[in-house]
Image (tube, rainbow, N blue to C red; front, side, top):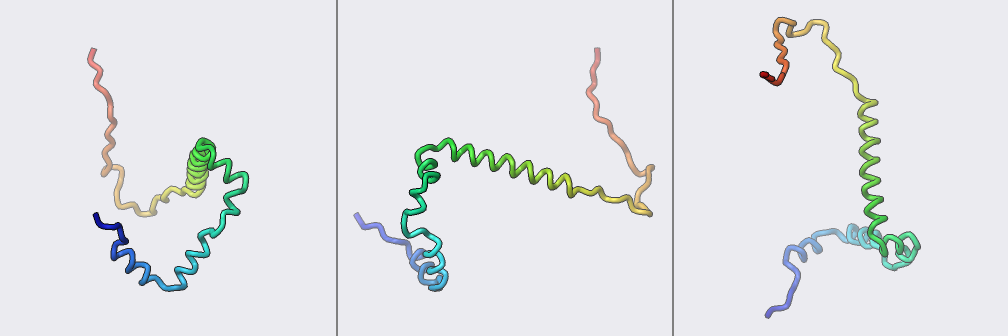
Amino acid sequence: MSSVTCFPAEKALITLTPQIIRNLAASLIPSNDHFFWWPIYRFFQQNFYPLSFLFIFLLRYIRVVTSLYGTYRYRPTPIPLSPTYHTTDVTVIIPTTDLIF
């Protein structure tokens, strides 16, 4: 059995990233756990359902706000002064169901 090592691509990616980007990424990752001892984090870690409710709540109301914004911003295309087609060029097809008694 051989020991598990990193793929060469992972090592190459680490060596290709500049030191500044690595330092920035390291500063964004919390080095201590003082944030995770706050009551809200402990509450979400202990119970899955409030987090799933929050996720569904955000998805629903972000969709509502987005659709309201789209409804507010909608403007129909104005009819041009010299249209390229006339009423004789248009055929209206009315779909119906054939009910034979």
